[in-house]
Image (cartoon, rainbow, N blue to C red; front, side, top):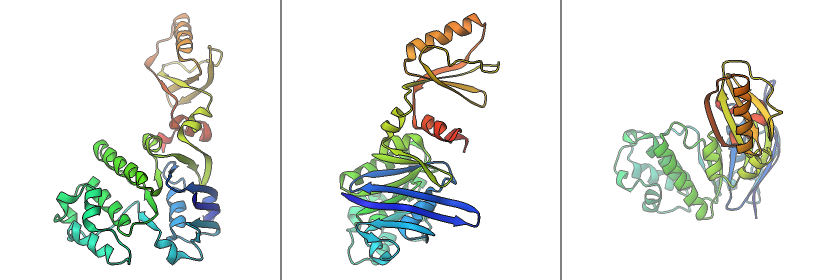
Length: 303
């Protein structure tokens, strides 16, 4: 069942088109991702979907309600974790949860939220003493206090260490198991691949591609990649066996191939014949990074 429908959403600031005709649908119980660099329009798109920012053109329907016409009713169905959440640092964790709960007629027990966010042991701790990961979990807990159908998570793991990031991934996946619909923005490729059922790759306010992570990678028609550096200018390598595309990122070359073993053998033979020394040679499967590179002509990591 369709939970969210976004049609031709647009937002401009002067001559800057921050969001330029975004259309998408999100199914009930789905984790839908917006993947792209900073400035791609992810946060602006999410804030318009949440009713926090007016849009110039377009339509957003959530759970059958128009965000523009029924904004107050929509807020009862959605929970929002902003990219940056300001909290009262001197309050205790339990206190701020109870305060937020008082804003709603329908609310979940605070103890349940504390357990779900792995914060039970921190219930009496002041917010200012929490770690970055604990603050992010608390922000998500505040978004869940009224038991919403739809949860918006804007860059939820930015700035977290790998352990805290993976702990938060577990929480997001657990929310999906509970039947929640989740819209998640991120610029981490691994995060998008692990969490998202489908995702939209955004750049310069537009959706460049939208599908499951595996289908987006498969659309490249390249199973694997060979990366290396060499001192000389990269010579034409497209003629090597099974190579479908060659790209260069700064001093690094990437060869995309449908047959890793044969392409690697051909590359080694070529470099031996030309007396070329390869540096930092590595092989890997094609990733969402490669999808972004093919769509935009630049690496997501450069942003």
